[in-house]
Length: 389
Image (cartoon, rainbow, N blue to C red; front, side, top):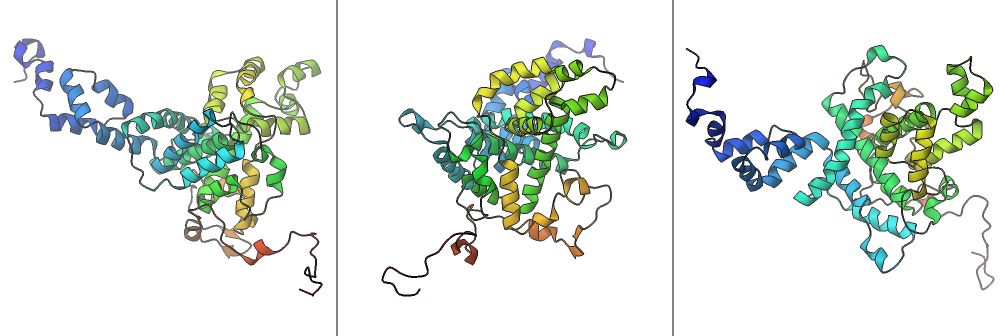
């Protein structure tokens, strides 16, 4: 016969029952909770708090791996946003700072050792990535909204990885308090060769081609979010609201053709946190301008270099002809409805091979082309003694 809770003696109330649980059982309960659930449960009572403190690192590590992985990319993001302590004694150039951070990032192992302090730093970035997981179906199925669905766990991991890599790149090369250098010059990277010793290329070369494709897909979608949702061109406004006057269109639009395209490229330097804030918490042009005026001082009025860096690395791996897989549903953040093997130019693409072509040290494999003079360069055909070389 069931017993009413109200009729239980005071010694058998819920508090005493939970306090009588073995510490191992309480710690086992923590293993099923997300980060916020863990922190909330640890405040229930002194016993729950002591059980949490006694096993804090393993509890937090398990939760952060399951909720915010992949962990190596998240650790790299934390490193990319750490201030350089040497800057107090000496003002570093953007290139030197980026190179130093890239060298540290390259050394992050597949299974990094975590500390409680590091985990709490990781949580703030992981929470933003989780918000992108919630928003992504709306972005991915922009046109065919009837097919929208929640992302599968492995798709969520892919998306978080792309968010972390995009954020790391922008933090390293687009947001810094140091003197601008060649790292901020997009024209130099446009003319770069795949083996050039550029910190942007070194960072991207540490990833295999499939990882770069995920980053490329996320970046392309961010370009669309900025160019269509946040800062639509005058032409886009005219298509949406054909009855609007020219003055009304100008007041809502963000420019035409080249000026609008350049604006979008400049705003591609925003971090995922900033893009998400604009997307979720602003609705008018005035609100977004006010936000950008505050945040815009963090970087120069130059376009993002990410797409150029990605194209340079893909070209160096002879991947450029394959183009963009994301919308072709061969490979991307979201699984295709019907899995199929990509075929380009009648040649079947080996996805397994594309997952093994990373350069862990960021260096480009030595090749004969690296020692040839650039196209159009003049080379003396005689040595200093007048002999023919």
